[in-house]
Structures are given as C-alpha cells and as structure tokens.
Length: 398
Image (cartoon, rainbow, N blue to C red; front, side, top):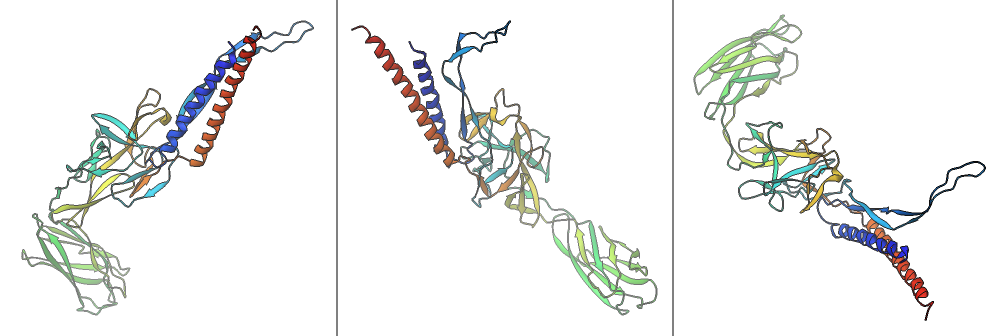
C-alpha cells in the first residue's frame, strides 16, 4: 500500500485532535478562570531510502533520502496567561492577579483552581461553587501562622471579641505656651473596665506659670468619677517646648503618658492619642485584603483577622492535570505545590469583588478552526489521490 495513505490518515487524526481542542476552548470562552489549550504537532518516523554517504577521494558526500510517515500530536499545552478581570462586587469573589492557584479540598483530596467564585455555606465554610473547601489558615486572637498546616477556612459567625481593660492611655498635641495663667483645658476620654463597661476619665490642664517666665508649667489633674480615683502632676516644658517633667500619671490602674505633648505657642491641640482596652463585640461583616487575610469587623468598631487564604505555585504549571470543574491536580511533571500567602514568594495578589475571566482569544481560536479544517481537507485529499493511483494500478489488468 502507498505510504501516503497512512500519512494522510495520521494527518486526519491529528487535525481532528486540534479541532477537538479548539472546540473545547471556544466552548469555555465564558468559563471563570479557564485556561486555553494549544495543540502541537510533530512528525513521525521517517523511512530511509538511501543512507548518507561520506566524502571520500575525489567524490563528495551524499545526503540521506528519507520519506516521512506522517504526523503525530506532540502535546497539548495549557496557556496560563492572565485572564481579564470581571468586576462582580461580591465580597466572596476573588481573583488572583499574577501567578498562583487557590487551594481547595474536595472529597478529602487537594486540588488547585484559578476560579475564585466562592461563598459561605450554612456552616460558615468558605466553599467553591461545587462545594469544595477553600484551604488556608485560621487566626488565633487575630494572629495567623502561615507555617501551620492548611485547614478549611471557616467564618466564625458567632465569634466574639472579648472585652479588655484599659491600662494605658497616652496624649499628644500641643499646650499653648502663650496662654494666660489660670487657663484651663479639659479632655474627656472613654475607657473600659475588665467587663467592657465604658466610663469617662477626665484630664484637666491648668496653666500655672506666666508666658515668658522660663520653663512653662501646667498642672494636670486626672479624675475617674466612676471609681473616685484622682491623680495630679505638674507637666513642665523647657524653653524649646519639649516636655521635661511630670509626663506620667497613675490613675487607679491606668497609666497616663504625656511625654508626646509639646509646649509651643498659638496651638491648642492636646488630645487623646491612643489607649488600649475595648468592649466585647460580635462579628458583623468581613472583607478580604490583597494578601488573602479575611478581616472581620466587630460590633465594637474593631477589626481583626479571622483567617487567611493560601495560594500555591508550581515549578511547571503546564504539567498540572485538568480534573474538571475548573480544578487542577498535581502530576509527576508539575512539581510539588509551594504553598504560602498571596503577594509573597512569586504569588500574585488577591483582588476582591472580581473574577478572572477565561483567557480564550476568540480571534485566534476561529483562526485555528480554519487551520484545522483546511489541514483536515488537505489530508483527505491526499487519501483521495492515493486511492486514484491505486485504482489506476488495479486497472492495468482488465
């Protein structure tokens, strides 16, 4: 039989595979996080009709005469280029801007995906559209250990942020050096006891030295009407306006720091700068930051991390195996997953409220359709021509 028949058949099969791959790409043009594939061809074995001849004496060398035996599919590679962003404004939708994959767990097995269309189920678990658990690290009192083993992320809807007693209170700003003697300023600050009950502590600043009389002094009186505690201090400033004495007051169990207060002219900006302590609060809402931290907002106005989403990278992402459902699995040629937090170790950042669209380029895919079709037609013509030659051979004897 003619070798061209088998070459034509191999061409039909290879271009049919190319058509299948292209059709799958077009079918997934709107699939979230889908990555297009590309078919690569290679030639098969070649039959040597005449071996190469080496130069010798007065005669030059000759090249080998070879006839190819067709074409094969060398591989089907996945294009992991970034897809366009589709803004959804859903707080649980996430997009990876850069390299990396979300880590999910389904039926006890770990998979990887670029599709970030997540949601919380009735138990508070962060899950994919198919119910796979999104993996990451839970927070302990607002602290996330990214070196700990991965676990399914869960939003603790009944989480409480416990109360904390106020023990430290600091002031900054400026007391006016040009204020008249006897000038009084009052500042009220809200503090908390160990049960989270709020109360008001009052600090009164009274000018006791005349302007231009050297070091400036203010008499500071701290008063806690709820507990009845009082304390006094003389806050002294040198001629440059820096506090040099009386900068610490002990009011009951609260340490009041005044060392950041200055004494320049024409400014009255003294105020409470910082304090610890808080009321108890329940989880009200959440947001996801660029590094994957799930930041919970509590009813007491505070925000605290409740978990962090993990990302995985691979030495050879093209070696991953597609498992369906926008999932990828590890293969022997992909390398092991390098798991860490977003924005570190070559991993991309997370964009909340958006999804990554398919990276299928329809113009390229329709061009590939034409190429596959014409390649199929050309190879079918080879088979037809070979058949006509065989028919002529059969008709030699009638």
